[in-house]
Image (cartoon, rainbow, N blue to C red; front, side):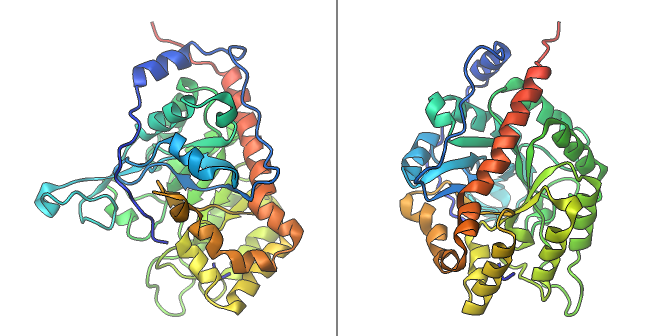
Length: 373
């Protein structure tokens, strides 16, 4: 399957007031307020399975501004920041402050406060507006055995907010080698532990994992595909969305990419694995030629309930920046059957995230936070 470059505006972002958030969360009880009912998309054009409210220096737009951009064209959207902070090293870039991970050779590091920011942004909305969002937990280090405990604490500190975890990255071109500390791995017991806890809760898991490394040797098999397949085999009860079907700006579709996707799609044990086709860097492969678009459409038409559309925009500055990828995919939309188009753009999102939201609320009710003392 021949399945862009993210913008990173630096306008100010809403300040999260943790003390207020924690106090509100600890005073919550299952009957304290009605849980927002998932909004029906009706005449909306799509739901967005992949959206970053903040960038690599934790700046972005307000959730109210994003609602204005969504308007009547978007029914629902995920809501998450970026779990990595780009260090501003004066020794490297001087007065030039980086806003993207390609702007500097300085390290990236995990930034857990992003989850509090997202929770407070969500809690600032009315119940009707909250129903349009599915916030995700991202501020954990997948090489840390305590990552699962971070997810548990976030759910208990901010009950009624999160539907899943991610987007989080294991193997990602140009990013993995920049992250301070251990290198994430598909074979790490820490990843297994956090996926086991996510399955216990019933959270949606949005994972970025490149299918191969950049610039592979000619004729080599995609180095990370088999490891990813084995991870899925170890965790058949997880609701997993594979971001970008394993592709990136440099990691291109290998010769048998369609076959590898179909291998996962046909395996009954992987029935809870879905695929997002977000990011303009991914869209460029699909619309690169009529043949590439046709092959992508043929696969989606055969499996209309397994693909989701997402923009993967980062704090878009305006409507044009946000809708550009949806418009970029117009050649693909034209080749999909009505069933497949409705599934990719609306229904698959609703099925996956309605379940994740329901599961998280049930787990929170059964596991209320207990104050020490």
